[in-house]
Length: 348
Ligand SMILES: [Zn+2]
Image 1 (cartoon, rainbow, N blue to C red):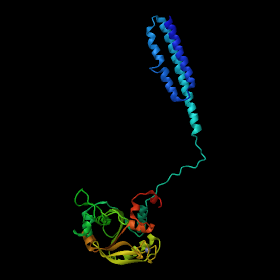
Image 2: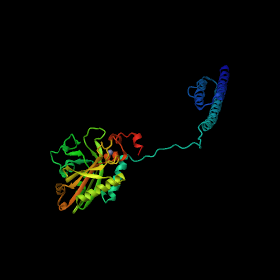
Image 3: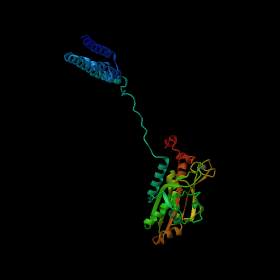
Image 4: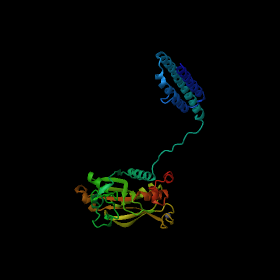
């Protein structure tokens, strides 16, 4: 029957065409296209098989069916063989082109390090701990009581103004601490005297941003409470700290000042380490740098804590960490600490 002979010829033609094309394929993705063309659901081969039903004789139908199966198996087998050899070939090529040159130097990964402010905080902490001060910590979100009332700061003091302090919307008396003295009050409430502590931490003030001021900065506060504490001990402590911090002997001068929580109070200047009182740009040609405030703890502050602090005296001091860091490292703009410019930070 012509139809059947044609059928066999057609099937063999497809097989020959497929196998010939296969020899030209040199890439896996081309092989997949070939598979679709000759073995896929919409292939010529499948189209032809759909016509099998038109053959009348069952025997012929059977023999052509067998032939079709053999061809299909041959094509499948060829596909698998090619697939394997092409994958091996591609791996070999990849190894040749992407091989690792073990003689090249390794990648230099940068390791992290401390921020200059962290370094200064650690340095200050270590110096005071060496003098017997305990380092304590407290919350940055505070209440009016700890930030002002307990520190003898009057209700009409300008520091309480919203222009100077960040209040939260949690409650009218909840604020971001504007000084680390809050930690001193909390420490005294928990501990009976004698007490020798420092607290280093972040504080917040509603300041305009410029080269000298930033709304976030760090403070160090120190407090010593005991019997018979005097101003001479305070002077010795601060002089010692300044010498250790700047790693040289620098002259200091104490000028009378006013703070609500100390009486008497003083502002402390140290000899400018850059010009030794001759006057330079850093000290504004004054020869001295204002670095901290201090004084004897105001009796009202101790009275506010409770009866265990009766008959005790204390001294307290406070200083800005950024200011000390700027002098120590010779930095003229506080904003460098907060811009996170890697070119700046990497210098420390
Ligand atoms: Zn100077």
